[in-house]
Length: 76
Image 1 (cartoon, rainbow, N blue to C red):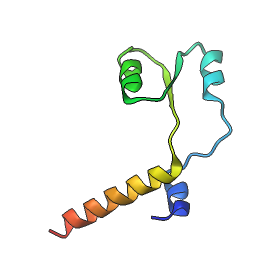
Image 2: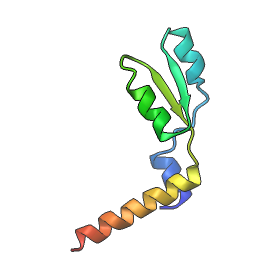
Image 3: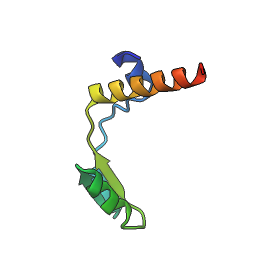
Image 4: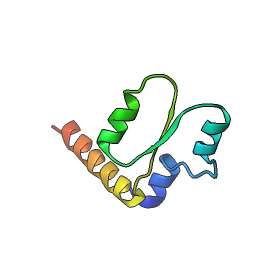
């Protein structure tokens, strides 16, 4: 899958500021940068918004690896 296909299927370009939206509605918001941070925030319970920044190129590479593994498994 090339980058354009990834963006069409999985990219979510927007101009929304989720941190501000959460604050406006009284919903806790947290940025996380590590798996431990994500686990900690997920363990807090209740409604919240968790922000995670990712590398788009790396995401495309991961998706391509997964697609290849699935295609290989289906041919066996």
